[in-house]
Amino acid sequence: MAQSLFEQLTTMTIAVCDTGDLNSIKKLTPRDATTNPSLITAAAQMPEYAEVVDGALSWAHREAGGDPARVVGLALDRLSIEFGLRILGIVPGRVSTEVDARLSFDTEKTIAKGRYLIGLYEAAGASRDRVLIKIASTWEGIRAAEVLEREGIHCNLTLLFGMHQAIACAEAGVTLISPFVGRILDWHKKAEGRDSYPPAEDPGVVSVTRIYNYYKRHGYKTEVMGASFRNLGEIIELAGCDLLTIAPNFLIELAEKTGTLARKLDPEAARTMDLPKQVIDEAGFRAAHEADRMAHDKLEEGIAGFSKAIVALEKLLTERYHATQGRAWVGQAAHDFFRAFDLDGDGFITREEWSGTLPVFMALDADGDGKITPGELAAGIGGAFMLAK
Image (cartoon, rainbow, N blue to C red; front, side, top):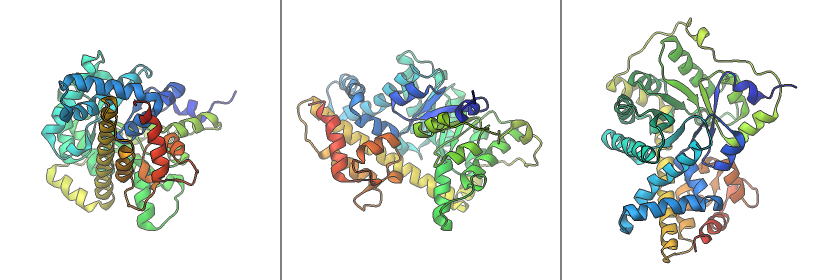
């Protein structure tokens, strides 16, 4: 019987499931799983996870001594841990849990948050070796990761778009980086007025290939995990990368397709390449970041997007907390959530603006027109929140 593309991929690359949906993880059985604020926010709306949300709020209520002003902040971290713990009960490997994106330019607060999140995991009986603390690849975030790594707290540097970020991460000794393939493609399509690229010429694929070869050529231990894919061709072109974090819809597609999957990235081949070693200090990093408009724009946009997702999640948790305390105001959560994700203010949330899981987007997009209206979102969120009333 012919092997599927997924089966072949897993002989050369570790497949990571990019979702907060526990049911998808159970079905797909990846080795690792990763989440981000958008994915957690999307999962938190789903009725089947009402118990997870309520559990986080109950814990936060106890920890805050009933002080409503502190509950949501505590619940926000606890919810990420609750999802993470459940994911660790399914996958044999690691889970990535993200630091609040609003701390991306504050080294000390990022360090403190990383220590706090690991403390919550360890208090629940999870080993720190199975957790990656996800931090944005700013200069400040990379410095925070360097400190955390020295303490045995492993880090996943996310929102990585430029070679200067990748080199700084490797020099800091971080465990893993997540270059965003699809978002790099998005920028170039818009900037160059193109609809598509051949898979091997896809700017995101080219970027990750360059980073991978540089790391292997110079013997860095930092793992490369391609992320944020827009099409199956990008995944196929990166076969052989250390890890690839893939949305459930693409994992299913890989599992359903057969054919020959060629290895495109090879550490032995990379070790023979002429790739001079570079050293990046703070001044060099900042200069390179300003010069690389794509990396500059996408990092800024990514931090803003994840920050909006956190604000939306805080509002959802506030709504739910008041519901469980008998002080609900129906509909406000849907209104606030919509405003947070309607990035261009045109009255619709598109698939690109959503940035969460495709199944959740499709479930909320009731008429299947590729856009979520305020009414569709209110109906979707309303179903989840009515469970608490």
